[in-house]
Amino acid sequence: MDLAPKIGGEYVEGLVGQPQRINPLLAPANNVDLDLARIVYSGLLKFDKNLNIAPDLAESLPVVSADGREYTVRLRDNVFWHGKDKQKVTADDVVFTFRTIQNADYQSPLRLSWNRVGVEKIDDRTVRFITRELSATFIANLTVGIMPRYIWEGVPAASFALSKFNLEPVGSGPYQVAEIKRGSSGEIRSLSLERNKKYHLGEPYIDTLTFRFYETTDEIIDAYHSRDISGLGYEPFDRGLFIEAKKKLQQIKLELPQYQAVFINDVKNPAPLGDARVRTALAKSVDKKKIISEVYAGQSSEAYGPILPGHLGYHEQIPGAPMNIYDVEAAKVLLDQAGWIADETGFRKDNQGRYITLSLVTNDFTPNIRAAEMLKQMWESIGVKIILSIQTTIDLEEKYIKPRNYELLLFSENVGADPDPYPFWHSSQRRDPGLNLTTFSNQQVDQLLVEGRSNGDPAARAAKYKQFQEIFVGVVPAIFLSRSQYVYNVTTNTKGINLTTVVTPADRFADVHEWYIETKRIKK
Image (tube, rainbow, N blue to C red; front, side, top):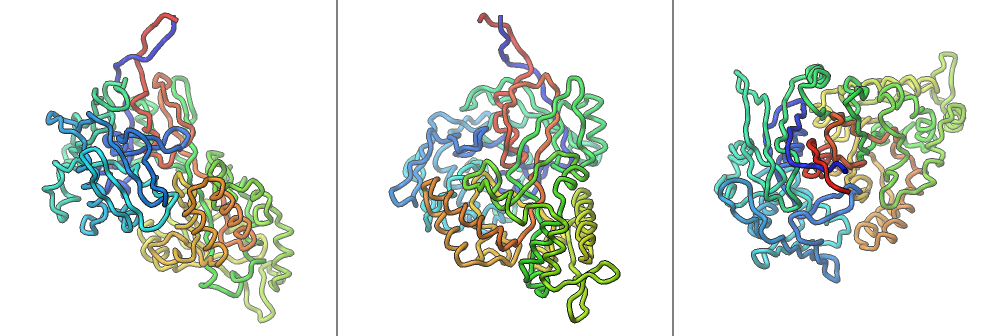
């Protein structure tokens, strides 16, 4: 006899924070909302466990026109919204969702990805998307959760973020909201989801998913060890939450397409930072292994460049580039060659007596503070004075990142499932809201990035991206430190979790309908 999954049981997970808007159009602003929206809603497409695009509400992958600019999507038949109304998911819902994203009045953080896309209904089950430019990366945008028009069309833009449907969501995902429990002050203590028996990808096994919400990491750790919760969801890299796996508790490490790096803005201090030898010296004096070991308790891997291992276009030789070889003595020689000579204090100055002094800014997230302190020690050991600036996350964004008001910025970027480097490294993206956080500008690179994103042939794209990386490591516009992991702790009786990599932490629920707790015996 073999064991097989059967329906039943309850899975309980703890989250730090409060649900505010379980709404796929607004959820990116709050990780708790992202987690819950991922379970309640379905997109036209989804990422599978290998980060490949797969059908979700769509019955198959889109049909792409010969010029690569039109995507025609056919919906599955007999997919229904949650609740007693039993209304079908139709093309009207799809068109409504994406036109709402495009409407600036609704203030969706997803709008930038949709401002040059046409959306039209062909029939009740068919939608066509038309992009102004050829884009090999557009298809990933179709993973956004689809919202029911009949629920939301009567909600004006001014009330969109305040609607009760943000906490009483109606979706088409594997689970639907069943109960919300609040504390005496009105805060949400827990939220229970019941399985959607009509889920289009297969009836879920676990009867109930319950999420309990905590104010602090200490509270959630206590709940985890006292078995009040079965799973622990949290931000990666918080050293206070690296919990050793124990008996009946398993630890699942999920790779994220996210790197931590120091972004260099040479315009703010061109004398030293405008010299590639100085930038290379800074990179060569960074001991990545030490940072990963002491700051992240080994719960991450080294990063070497703008495209991560396992992603289309990753260049296998990039780890061996000079900027990625840790060599303190070689770094000192480069600074000597650049005219920055150490005096009796050990710090370096030029022939005009000016010391090389650089400012490094990051946010007040504890691991970032520790990493910044280690970088200061490493750089001062080669004679470069460092002034640390620790800011709140809001101040870092508003006062430093948006106006590009920094010399060195310690920050993380999630590049998504598709490795398209255009938003992060094309010269047109150097100003907010672009994501190029350096002053990197190279005409050849710009051309390669445009050609890469507009080519539907994966091999051709990969070749363009490898050329881009070869130029990149010679210029050294950023210093890469580590690749993020999401460390997920759950009880060993929660089975069926078969992921090894995710796009965002919320994607750990990509196959939640296949998780199970209860088992039954079957004949071999």
